[in-house]
Image (tube, each protein chain N blue to C red):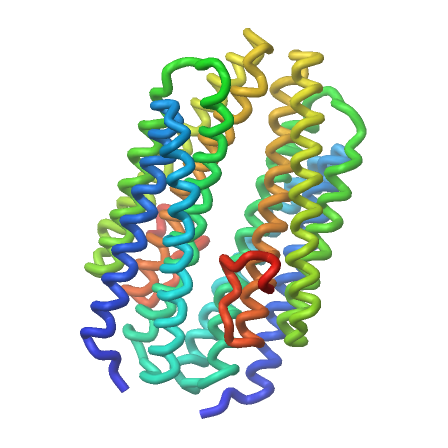
Amino acid sequence: MAVKSNELAHLHEMLLKMASLVETAIKNSVKSLVDRDSGLAIHVIENDKEINSYDVKIDEECIRLLALKQPMGKDLRFITTAMKITTDLERIADNAVNIAERAVELNREPVLKPYIDIPHMSRIAQGMVLDTINAFVNEDTSLAKEVIIRDDEVDDLNRAVCEELMEMMIRDPSTITRVVKVTYVSKYLERIADHATNIAEDVIYMVKGKIIRHMEPGSL
Amino acid sequence: MAVKSNELAHLHEMLLKMASLVETAIKNSVKSLVDRDSGLAIHVIENDKEINSYDVKIDEECIRLLALKQPMGKDLRFITTAMKITTDLERIADNAVNIAERAVELNREPVLKPYIDIPHMSRIAQGMVLDTINAFVNEDTSLAKEVIIRDDEVDDLNRAVCEELMEMMIRDPSTITRVVKVTYVSKYLERIADHATNIAEDVIYMVKGKIIRHMEPGSL
């Protein structure tokens, strides 16, 4: 039985809503660090429940469609991809919660230095998350490939941030406990970009019916 | 159409084989650090290709069974769970590769101190990975619940390791670049345990038909 277009639209809608909540969580977690706003950080931590409820709802809807409609071909791939995407989105939100937790700790201590690269990484990662979901909804493999390429930029920024922070610790060991927490934030953002990349790879699979995970970048 | 028992057995077999490769990867990555054996670390990095090929093979087999057999009820949940498990196993292996990469870097530098808690964390994490897959194959929710509880132990060890390492850096700033890498190893192991916990939660869902992700531990 074919999956009805309104059922697919409902899945689209839930994924877009979840992605928008996740994007806001990333943005606010980094904002809570940059603006030293622990209230906002706690807001991010509390809002994670709503994101988790979307994870469960989307999964249940996918299982329901698989059971009732027994879809084939592209509909089948669409639904199994949606199940994979919701797992990645949920884990991205967990990383935003981790950033918010570090922000609460860092906001209690003296300012280190203005954050420049971290908000930059965050903006790229947020864009990657929104674009992967748009790529999914519009079956846009070019956009998905673009997202995969942007991951390298985040990796490079993470490396630069970690090196700079390492030097800061060596120069002034009194900063160590704070600086280590900032390196964690940088790594959480890098992992968010990795999850977005996983989603982009799944979108390409869904459209082309070919699993591109674990391929060399040149063969995309 | 019901999925044939030999088809399910074949999926079991592939997942058990993949889990065994992943467990070996974790074990060898930590061994390469403890024994300062960079050859073994490179072996772990190279073997990741085989694990990735299982990820693709299992996913393709699951999609094939969903399309051809259009399974219902527990068979359906078994197959969608297998797809989620292979994603987590593959990411666990990525973390083992990350540990091996840090080992190669650390093995080039002077010894810090004997590793005690990290091999301990690794043994717990390895056991969690094997037990979750056994729980899956034997539909053993008690074992899955045990795995979830063991995650707290890994979290506590990670916290203790990171605190100890922080003190080491403050005492002797010449160790900073090395020590930061060891904190990453500890966090990779913690993440491996998190992935095993995700698998255990999916196994409980598969058997009970109830999504327990995002529930409070007391309500398990």
